[in-house]
Length: 137
Length: 236
Image 1 (spheres, rainbow over the protein chains, first blue to last red):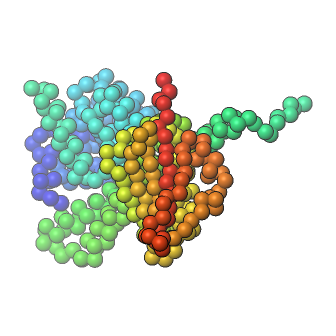
Image 2: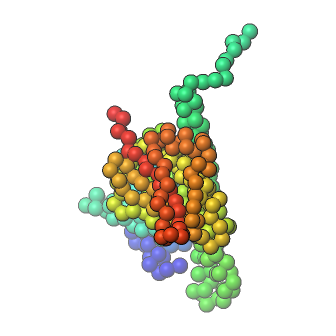
Image 3: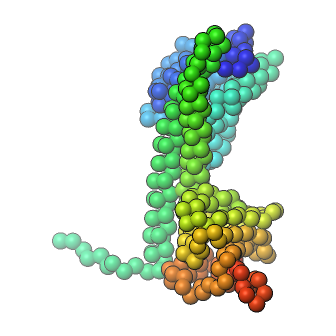
């Protein structure tokens, strides 16, 4: 693990929520982010994600586009209604760019296609944190 | 009492039915690639965690068997390659989302080539793609073009043998795009041998299929054909 990766999340007060109904994916990604000193929690459905949203108050949400109980776009809408400053990175297994464009229109910070390389995701998280910090100034 | 339904449809009905069939097939493929990507994502993260643990052990001064690191790297590499294939499959599948759309012939061809390389390789035929530069998008039926290109490729492969090369090139022409298939090492071919249904599909696309001039002087060393695909007026 690179030192730079380990430094991410330190002293930034970052809280990250992963919402994905692919339980093993969400749990393992969460563990890997925690190993990099990122305060991450995971939820395995849209509903559980919305509960954790109010309990954990995250700065960043990593959200799956297609879940069994709710569409990621509906969850995105609710997250933005709860707190528009929360930056949401959408994850999708779809090859069509249409869903990503729609997510962008609904306020997502960006979207990435699964499987993602962790360094790329870390970079995206960093960018989302910077955008949020600029918005709070 | 049931009402009888005639089995024969009009040409329009037949076309609509084929389009619907393509769309269903496309959706199935897109769903399949989506599902595969989810599995790959889980494997990638599990493997990543394994790499993290190995790296931590290493940094603590514990010896990590080189074979373990090598295996984890191999898994990662294969996952990335499989994810790329799924991405191509998904893009290809989404080509039949709408019957007519604007698309790049170079991108469409690149998606297809990924899946054609294996069969060319198994026949020991080299496959070379020469995408023309600065080709704009055309408006036509991308799923039908995909089908035609696959059939043209299969036709070419039947004529090529060990050590020969198939060169597929693209170029922009007025009102559309040109796709050339050059069979290096095949002195002669006859488009009459092409399946009639492929020729019907070519006509349905509004395209033209022509033989290329033979090259190599008196003794021809290559032959081929080209497909001129028109860009249709965009329907408003």
